[in-house]
Image 1 (cartoon, rainbow, N blue to C red):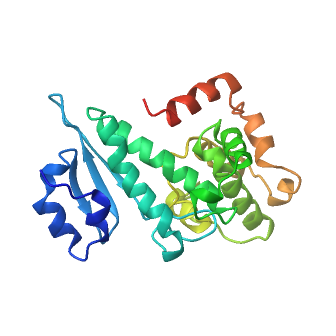
Image 2: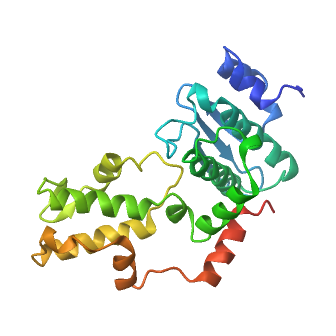
Length: 244
């Protein structure tokens, strides 16, 4: 078995060729795409084996991408983590492994709003604030419901057209793209989707943009009884960021 590290593969000019000729070193990796910065992790045990893909070329809160030159240290950190986590958890499921990687990606994404591009710059204050922000999940730590709510609110107040699939039904993928949250390291917009449901319901009932003036996303979440429970949020946080 080769002693080649996964990071060596990603740094090589012939990366995919190197991966294919040494793939026995990573039986849990079914494929990598250097061009698209996607890795596919596969189960190594069980009858019904599944595969989970992770996009590494994620957008960060400061508008940059993880693959940008200025974020090189964090990009390499993620590649090393992909391999080190598996070495310490050799029989972990593909979906769990992929989620751990996304958890690291969300932390890096969150750090970018403070212009932090190195772990050496992370302080105890940052860790405490992230733990507080992430307690209710990645959607809230990256302020996605708020970003989407405010973007639609702004367009309605300015009388601009919104992307609809049919009468008062949003083209959600297009909205996420317009707001810039589509490429963030998160797969499911649970609370954000409910915020959009709320907007659609209001518009179907003759809702006027001017009524939004003083409303916040917090008001809407409270109206929908969607303020996360602190105890459940803590359990979810520990499950998401635990390495076991």
